[in-house]
Length: 333
Image (cartoon, helix red, strand yellow):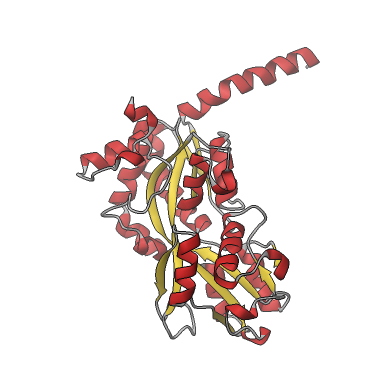
């Protein structure tokens, strides 16, 4: 192929990219690391969508692991993926262009629904000498992959609760599976794993040979955190969630969300929601985190970004009142 022909082919491909997204013949769901909650949940949803909708729509859904929320937001905004799972606060920040997205709005993001509370699980090795938040200075802490939602949360939580920055600790940017292995091997002292519970990487830690525990968020810690980051809410990790975890642990959480690019067709989003609601009992059996989803009010806790028109139609038809701030620009015209 000549250079001129190659250049022309590239231009044609670029011109057709938005149309390909809108046609929706392929829907890629970006998730997170395999040791977290997003990837197995994304896999479950993709299986349900393909089984229920693949033949009638001609669409092929696929799941892709990723660095988590931050990467998912960028991939969906750029049209490199059609759907993502992510922390609702960051989806909202990115749409509005505030906080870490200051001056860089992501106008093409649309919510499908709220999912579950993402618990901030600060797991530490008992051999590390850590007994409270004041003991974290100088410790080796896995703060999440670089530029991930967990890394952002680590900065916020450490600063608000412990008065620490990354300069005060030895920050290790690891995925959840890597962090779990490193904690078991003794190469780090603690790790923040922010995910729906039960989280597989945390379960592995509690079941492993290294004795671990989890830092609780007391009333004072919660008050300091919520003052700086009001998107956090109190959350109780019930006893028995993990092996050898015999007491409730007071934590904080942020709402997780399912979101799409605005060009995903309205009827496709509508039908995906039909599948989720119809299969809710099966979903709960396949992963316990679905038991934390408020299927009766699946827009509660959404922040910043609007719903997709297909989601607006679905929820309104079922009698849910959709707040004005969740209506997409295309529905306000």
